[in-house]
Picture: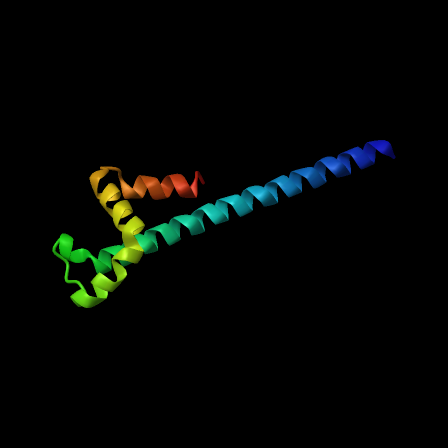
Length: 95
């Protein structure tokens, strides 16, 4: 009887660990998507810096103080020469 309880506890621990790993992977993917959406939004607002059409200047100037961190992130990302596809693949993990 004690043997079966031990096996049941091991299986239960495995299932809990597997569930936590799945949650972590899903959360990491959602965080990456939010990060990419913030970058896209920043690029849409301040795309004039790279030649894209931008919204009216008063809108950009109103949002400028609120988006200081996003602009710094956009400039940092532009300065890094990483491959976006490899970054996405590293977030998704191996099949």
